[in-house]
Length: 64
Image (cartoon, rainbow, N blue to C red; front, side, top):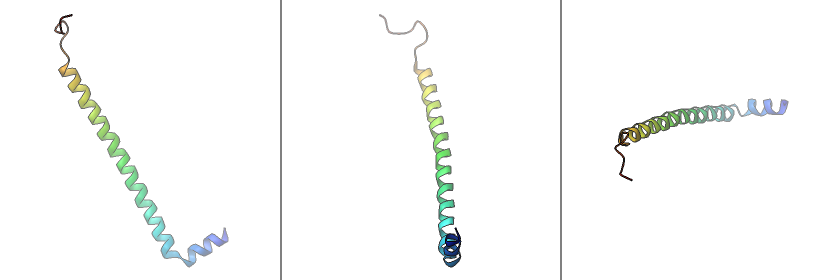
């Protein structure tokens, strides 16, 4: 473990850059996942509403 801390102390710039990139990547990934879930939920709600509005009323279906 001391070797790890020694390497980080020696290469502090690269350790900080790596940490910043990981934080940025996690932030973007979480943001995209949340926005995607919201978009999918909205699309499913719109499809459900369109399906309900296009379905024939009771007794108005095609003659069998």
